[in-house]
Each structure stands twice: as C-alpha cells, then as structure tokens.
Length: 518
Image (tube, rainbow, N blue to C red):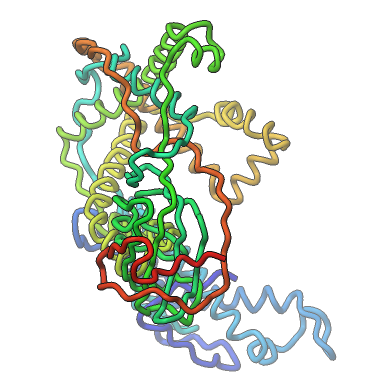
C-alpha cells in the first residue's frame, strides 16, 4: 500500500459502527458531485479545495468490506459469509486507510482534469479531514506550468558560429598532445612552483605527538591537501618552498580527518623538501612527430587542425539552437514557478555538498562554497526551465512528437551494448521511470532541430588567424613521479612550534625540525 500523503492536520478516524447507518451528512450529500474550488496564489501556483460527498466515501468503504469479505476464509464461517463485525474489527483500519488514500488521489486527479491544470512536481496535501461516514475534504497547493503566448518562433535570425580553427586553438590543442609526452626532470633552481612535484618528508603533529609521517613522498605543488588534511594554507606551504629549507604551518583538523580523536584540534604540518620535479614539455619536431605516429611535424599539425574543426562542427548546431532559444525567450513573458526553482536548487546543492564532502572539505568551507554558487545555480535552473517550457509549447503548436519506432531505433544500439533484447531494455527503463525522460529528451531534440531548420542563420565574419605563438609550458602537466613512500608509526617529534597560519622557514640543521628518517 502506498504511503499516505503528508498533511498538517491528520485525518480523524473513529471506530466504525457495527452496522451501516445513513447519517444526515450522507443524506444531505446524496446525489452531489465532488466540489472543487480553485484559488490563484501566484503566476504559477494554485490552491485546490476539494470536498468529496459522504455518499461516495460510504460507497468506497462498503466496496472495501465486500471485496475482503468475499475472499476471506475464517474459521467457523463459509467463504464470503464472515459477519461484518468481525471484518470491521480485523480490517476496519486497513480499509479506511485504503479508502482515504484512494479517494485523495482519484479526487485530486479529477480536480486537475476538471480545472485543466498541468501540475509540476508532486502535490502537497493539506488540511485533510476524513471519517468513514462523512465528506472527505482537503486542500492541495501545487505548481503549474506557466501560461504564456508563444509569439514568433520561426525565422529567428542568428549568426553561425565560427568553424575555421584559429592558430591559437590549433597551438593549444598541440600543446595538450605534447603535455601527454612530458617528462619530469629535476628543477635546477630547487624552488617549487605551482604544477611542480615536491619530493619531501612531510609530518603531521598534534601537540607533541607525531600522528602521521611520509618520507620522500611526492606532493603536487598547488594542492591544498596532504596527509589526510585539507586546508587552503597547505597550498601556500608548498608553493615557494626550497630544497634543504624546512617549513611548517598550523592548521585545524576538520571533521573528515581519519583519526576521530584528533578532529577539531590544532595541528602542525612540517615539510622537509628534498627535490623539485618539473614537467618538461617536448618540442614538436620531426622526431616527436614520428613518436606520435606521423611522418612529419606538418602532418601532426594537419591532423590536429582537422580534429579541432570536427569538434567545432559538432558544437555548431547546439550553439545555433541555444542562440535561437535565447532570442525567443527575450521576446516572451514567461513566469517561473519559484518553488520549483528553489527545490531544484536544493537538489543541486545536495549533490555538490556530497562531492565536496568526498573531497574532504569541512562544513564551513562547503557552506561558503554553496552560498556563493546558489545564485548562479538558480539562474542556470531558471534558464533551463524556460527552455523546457518553450520547447514543449512549440512541440504542441507544431504537433511534434516521438514515435515508438523512433524510440526503438534510439535504444537498439544501447540494448546491444548491454546484451539485452530491446523490449527487455524498454521494460527496465519504464519501471525506473527513465523511458518517459528519454522520450521527452528526444522530443525536445526534434523541436530544437525544427527551430534551427526554420531559422535564418547567417555566417559570422571569419576572425583573423592568430599569429603562431611559441608553445608555453602548462602550469600542471606530466605524470606523477614514482617515488618510494614510507610511512612511519606515530612518534614524538623533535620539531619546534611555529605560529598559526604561517609558513615558518628554518635552515637545515637548525632548530631540530623533524625529518623522521628511519
């Protein structure tokens, strides 16, 4: 049995009488239809007030007893002849709950159809009043699809995106290829820069106890995490560090630190740099071209140019369609259901919060990040919702729909990949609620293509090709060096204490900084 809709005012359920009695309420409501009132609460919000006559309630209750009584096998009685008092005692509560739930759903659907509403999301039932022999009344607050005039949507003028790759785009793509062939070499200056890898002994102290230590470990310079601790100050600790110059910084261990007994405590991270590894990006010469499988550097450039052009060609239609939708939306007044935006923003935040927790951020950092991003998220959600409503409106106006044959063609390859027959895949998707989502996405894609085909797309002026620029080494590139990583058990340190939040430098051999060599 489905879960009962939540309501602020719980339904009043009393024990039924031994025999069915026609009450005054039932007589007064005899022959009456369900009463439905509709109030406007905002551009996209409505309040439904529904009253189901007592006669209908009693009829459904009696039907419930009849169905159970006809099938019940009870000791001492023939099948279908169990006395009503026994049925009421054993099944009264169950029958009333099922009747209440069924009438709520069916009368809600009747009200939506009667008032020609298009609800969004799930209904919120409120002020539910139910007794077995009295009228059922309830209210429903719901968001509905916005009502708007479509206006002009054919012949929209947009510029076609530039397709010819520029020299800068080609150079950038070649650099990405070369980065995959980068090798790590020892940095001669011995100073760690963002994108380098620092080979160092790293220790974590809580008070006088060294709780974590890694010897000659490889740390990506620019990261804000080490030894299970994530803090922005860690980034500053490594950037600018020098070989043979110890540094330390004080941090607070967050609620994601593995050792629970140390969470919330002040700690110190000490680093003793041994070597700085830096990515060396090779030049695109004839030798490198052959390593990449080409006859010459010119052939590499030709291949990269072709792939950049293909990528831009694939992106062309979506960019045109997005521009068309944007221009149409500028010309229409399309109110949005604020509740839906807030609800979807909550869902987005929940997903982001989970990802940030997995990254090891503390609660305050997560909340600060979400607070900054919520406004942007709501803007993106609002734009997406407007596009959806617009696409649905055009589909309705042009009678664009997706056939079962088109769905089958769309899913055939996917079914083959999963080793399923097509119908089995469709059944699986239908049971999970995904089949209707796929149909909607296919319908929207058809509308986007329709708008593009009926638009006036003019070529954009080709930009001047950028002069070939010398390739620059990226900030972050190259494989992580393979280094021996040794982790010692927790030991008492010899290191001194530094000031909180600052990187303290001490020359090698001075101050007894903990290096932890085994």
